[in-house]
Length: 397
Image 1 (spheres, rainbow, N blue to C red):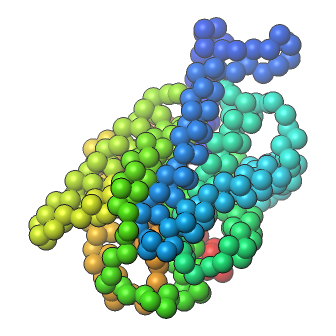
Image 2: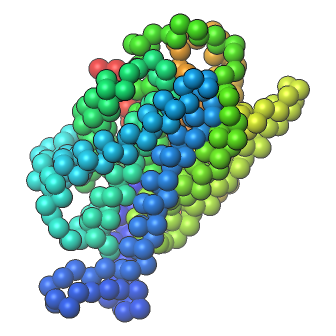
Image 3: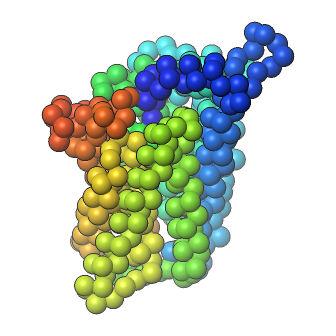
């Protein structure tokens, strides 16, 4: 997401100065100049991404046993409280504050002491406070994703403590490594436009590890289907799909052509994955509504790291490949020796999308990105693998 900032900033600086219709400035001559279009879009994207957490609660809530539905809804909802408080106190500063090294931010921006300022790197055309809140919504939904793997097996107080510690020790450093101004994975060259590594791979691996540590449910049956309220799941899926447009297109950090590209790829991949899943179901003799919902989510997860770096044709293919891979893995679930309640590790893992970013990325599409292996830069694939392995290894350690 951050890699496009520098290439875009030069263009934005000129357009801001020459287009008074799209700028706002305080009467104080020393105040920064804001592009009202960019700021409005980022505020809208922030709202869309925040909507995804209650949408996730409904998506998960419809798939669990009736006895666990309120517990599952609250596991997602409580993240909106804990993580936002943590983010304002020190989380944002730790992830994006003035860095002390390539691995860590600092506490210089604790309690958001920077005020209403611009930052030439993170928010070149709008207030840093807007960027802060936009990133907060990512930090909120990531531990909420993990809750789907452990529902029904963890009491509320230990879960709340886990969310606070995990957000501080795991999520914040990873966000800095991938998106920070001097993060080591960003410096290496790894591409993650909107959170395929930071959000999806990280939450998937974390859910797998947490479910393994907690052990299986006492009534666990890998062949059973526990979904009790599919209308909840369909509602959650539709709201997640809508919110994902802010998740991916907002990561362009401006109301720009790159945002349009990310928006198109997001919907193309979700649609192709949905159709692919339904076709496979039909070929096997039964179309499941819950499977169709899962298919669209798989497409959205797969395209997330690549949405601002690939052409829409590749976005279509990424959705298809992602759906086929996850469908096959879920068929093998009965042979797996862990109890991931809602298949978070498989559905939200995102590894295939991060890998395919290294294949299909094209600098012609986004000058702030890089060419992938299919465009004469095979080293990009290794950068993506390094990011994937880092996300996997960080939580296991």
